[in-house]
Length: 45
Image (cartoon, rainbow, N blue to C red; front, side, top):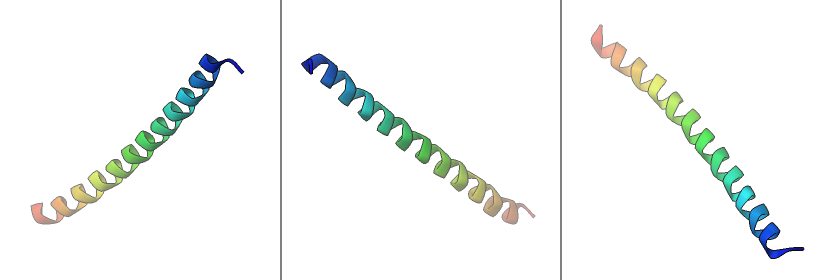
């Protein structure tokens, strides 16, 4: 297999993994923000 094609395949896999990690982190951050808003709302009452 051509070396450039192997490099492209590997970089594509790394990009996919990075995108998945970014998506998971974004979901977790959203959950934390919702939790924080709930805690702050308790103090506002």
